[in-house]
Length: 142
Image (cartoon, rainbow, N blue to C red; front, side, top):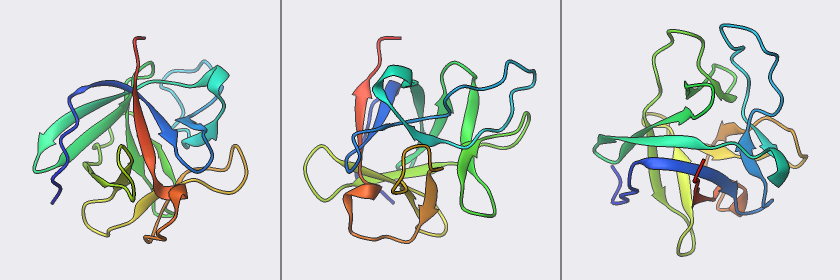
């Protein structure tokens, strides 16, 4: 699986290529929350996520404020789960340089990938050997 061990906790997920943060941006104040896609958002509206180790290098990633796990859909879009939807167990592997990581699906070896434009949804795609698939985990004090 993975030889990475990231301690459980709250983190901002920062894309190495763009310097942007993973987040959902403004979400309508409805309950249950809309299963919004994760996007590349700016520093001003960055949002923390919790990492919960599940063993064998797998993690549940949950939006801290909305308390919804991060999943991906049939179109490969990384998004918040619908209320009651089973969480995805993500595998975190080393990036191409120190202190960089890649987040991938367990079954299909598809990696979180940031699009070329801000606010493009984050998707899971085949490995591309590019920093658009590399992430840093910044500890969040929030």
